[in-house]
Amino acid sequence: MIYFTLFLEFFKVGAFSFGGGAAMLPMLEQMVEHHGWMTQEQLYNFVGVSESTPGPIAVNLSTYIGTILGGPFGALCATTGVVLPSFLIILIVAKAYRQFKENQYIGNALDMLKPVIVGLLGCATISIAANIFSGFDIQRFAGGLLTAQNGISFFVIICAGIFTIKKMHPIAIILACSGIGALLGYVILG
Amino acid sequence: MDEQLKKKGKVQDLFLTFLRIGAFTFGGGYAMIPLIHREMVDQKKWITEDEMMDMVAISESTPGPIAINAATFVGAHVAGKKGAVAATAGVCIPSFLIMLGLSYVLSAFESLRIVQYAFIGIRASVLVLIFFAWLGMLQQMKRSVINWILLITTVVAVEFFSVNPVAVILISFFLGIVHTLIWSGKKVKK
Image (cartoon, rainbow over all chains, first blue to last red; front, side, top):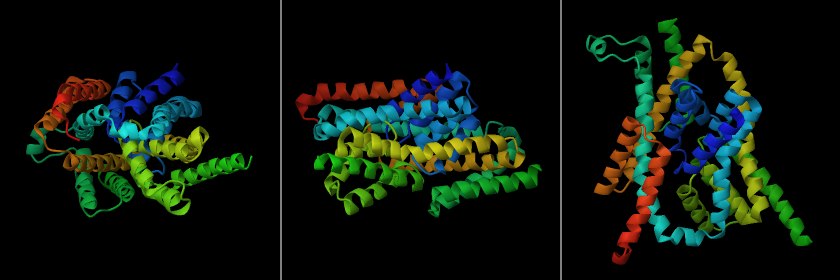
């Protein structure tokens, strides 16, 4: 039953992602791999689109994946799933947030969680890099050869790095990079 | 009776305000915080500066998308459960509709070669954006031996031993509580 599975999987993502989606990506990677829903590449495409459309990124991503897998109702199930844990937890916390904030156990446990979240975001970075350069061959590279696709990726990464250092807006960066990718692909790969 | 009418008006107002915020903020939860501040603290004066700061702290330290946490918190604070539903639904609906439409458009054009090239660029830019987000988090992290151990253990466990990220989060949260229990006699700092 795809609808129930979508709801449940996104409920888990919503319930365990701390710090605004940083922990979300490794969870999503495991989710789509476990169910064989889509390739890692498709997932990263979705992440790119979700970051450059308005609204909460988690909602964008869950709606997008839900629609692809189960149409409008699938989107509804996935989005409800990702939103519900937050909603319920905040409803409880909002009533007693001073106690929550000053609770020593929760405070320390959250401190302990910070480096783990940094680690999880590191994992996401490694996974995406590994995926982008999956056809990368060190011997060919040493011989001065790079597959055309790796070459394009490499060039775009350098451009995106420069854009980021120049403090361009993330959406402008994604849009510019999609343009560069399309142009180079068209010119080099035809 | 008058009180009830006022509350109803607030619920509607919350819905419309968060609908606008959801439709016009790019870049997820963090980008929404200044907008919520302007609408709720400066203009409507429904929450105070202090409450706003608490709201941000709570949104960051509870699981789930920051945008959803913030909307639910503000809604609950201003007009109770109904307010929470109104604000959360408001912030989600624009995203949901936009992504629903966009996913059909994109899946229709996905097989076009030029779109695939554009996605090579998008994936590369996503890698760079996530890498810099990671760098930012790393700079904010307190540099202690235990934090580095937790970070590296997380990366090794998830990336090389395919440990479920949810398990890593639960274990470190539990460790944080145990840590407090053991050291509670010796005054835990912060």
